[in-house]
Length: 292
Ligand code: UTP
Image (cartoon, rainbow, N blue to C red):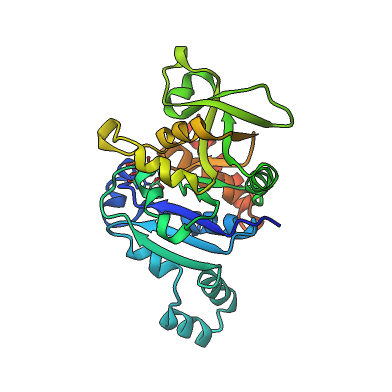
């Protein structure tokens, strides 16, 4: 079992890709089938043994706090009406972990959101999970990243091989030769043009950090759009200490963009016993009736 206890989930972005839904609703509360995206991520952290969760919130984020809190009135009616299964679900979402909140007053970028966690995290290594990415892998990737951290005592990034024309949407690493899916990161570049990308290994939303990341975040100058980039802080960290990358290939849904969000809803539904057959039939019917 890992020694790391704390997870940080940044959820203070504007979510502009999902406007107008995100005008009044946090993106992280949009459901994948019937569960808010952020609950999948909290469950993943808990499954990996993390017990202390800090969610970075911004404006309009009350719904996130309410979701993980008790709702006595709803529980009362579900109990009265004998809806025991639903009652269990509702109670479970408020008993998942020790969840804390801190506000990022202005959305100054992912790096800035992580820096807001400093006081809560203190001098311990910790995990960052972005709720734009949900994993359907029983926390296998996160567990192996935590194992790597426990072995080497260093930061670990989740890496995904992407097609060459997709690398410009991601942070990209320059890796030293690897073994067993583990690479040592030599450099990291934010959204390189394909021709200049040092590899096709993209960084995505799971990180294990040593507490030294806070000091490097302090030194990062605002980049594109005035944002403090997490990638720039990782670059500075690399000047002082090794950083590892853990390659993986399956189980991730990128729900930060519309197509990925729709696909995740369908795939998760297809994985569910209560929905799988009906959803498959629905998909066949859509294809047939639209002559796709
Ligand atoms: P994104 O880059 O997806 O930004 O952030 P966004 O605002 O959520 O969405 P778009 O691009 O406008 O559609 C990645 C993660 O970092 C968090 C977001 O909430 C998301 O989980 N984030 C981003 C913050 O917490 N604060 C920020 O200032 C920026």
